[in-house]
Image (cartoon, rainbow, N blue to C red; front, side, top):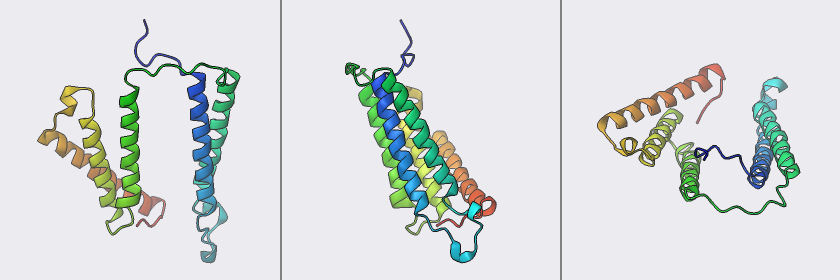
Amino acid sequence: MSAPGDESPSARGDLRQGLGWMALGVAVFIGSVTMDRLERQDVNPYTVPGLLPGLLGLAMVLLGGILALRSWRRGALQEAIAAHPADQHEQRRRVLIVMGLCLGYAVVLVGHGLPFWLASAIYVTGSILILDRMSREPEARRMSAGRVLKALVIGGGAGVITHLVFQSLFLVRLP
């Protein structure tokens, strides 16, 4: 009997994932193309915002296409739809919560008056506490002052370091 998580992914699942990565890559590429090029400020075309995200978007499309093609060759369209594992509901719930946290960060916290470092610190701290609370381990689910302090230190450090790296190293002005 194999350990949980040792099962090889299904061809149908790989096809869905490949198509999803391709769609995300196209969206990232479109977003990068529509970014302000700062031409009015005589910015070197190789350093314009959007160049790296555009290249990453193209890479996601390419690699997602390879994954989708490989799964198609493995018979993804002929594969029977498998029964869902018992813990798939929990996995989906976690993915949805993480997506909600990311969306909350992007839509609610960033760009609405809070400094970027503080918004990032709140997001990281909240994510740590929420995901710890969802852990399968009873010890990890227990909230103590030490765990909250640790999450606050990590979140605050992540917010400040991210802000400093973007402002000082990449010279990107953050909201």
